[in-house]
Length: 242
Picture 1 (cartoon, rainbow, N blue to C red):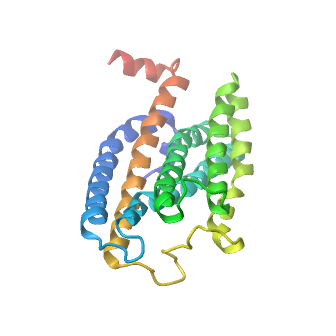
Picture 2: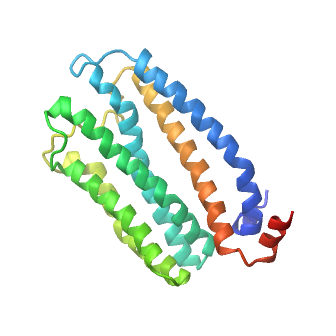
Picture 3: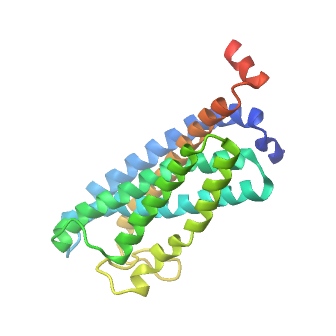
C-alpha cells in the first residue's frame, strides 16, 4: 500500500469516508458491551459500593484526554516540521474531541468525588492539571479560530499545542509527585492490575470504544475541514457536480 497517497487530501477524502462507518460501528459495539459489563456484570466494590461504576466512563475518558492531546501535538509538530497543511488540519480535527473527553473526565470525576470525598470539587493536583488541560484544548481551538490567515493560525496554534504538552506528564504523575486525594492508577504497565478481571475488561472495552469514536469523528471533522479549505479546488467542484 502506498501510504504517501494519504498525504493528498484528494486521496484522503474518499478513503476517510469509507472508514468512518466501520469505526463508528465498532465504537457503538465496544461501548455497548463495555457499559453492560461495567454496570451489570462487574461486582460491587467492597469500599465504594455502586458509586464506583462511574469509573468505567471516567477513567477511559481521562486516558483519552491525555492521549489525544499527545496525538494533537504530534500532528502539530509534523505540520511545523514538514510545513504540511494536512498535518495542521489533523491537529485541528482532533482538538474538539480531546476537549470533549477532558470535560467528560472532569464531569464524571465530580460525580465520583461527591459520594467518595463529600464534595463535587477539590483543588487537587490531578483535578487541577486536568482542568488546565481543558483550557489548553479550548485555547488551541479559540486561537486558531481568532486568526483569519489560515497559515498563521495553523502555526500559532501548533506552537501552543507543543508548549502545552508538558502538562500531560504532570497529569499522569501528579498522584506520585504530590500528596493528593485522587487515588493512584488501578492499571499500570509495570504492575499487576488492582481490580477484578471483569472490571478491567469493562474498562478496556470502554477505552476501545472511545478510541474508535475518536477516529470516526476526527475523520468526519477532517472531511469537513477539507471541504472548507479546498472549496475552490477543481476536484471539490467535481464532487459537488457528481
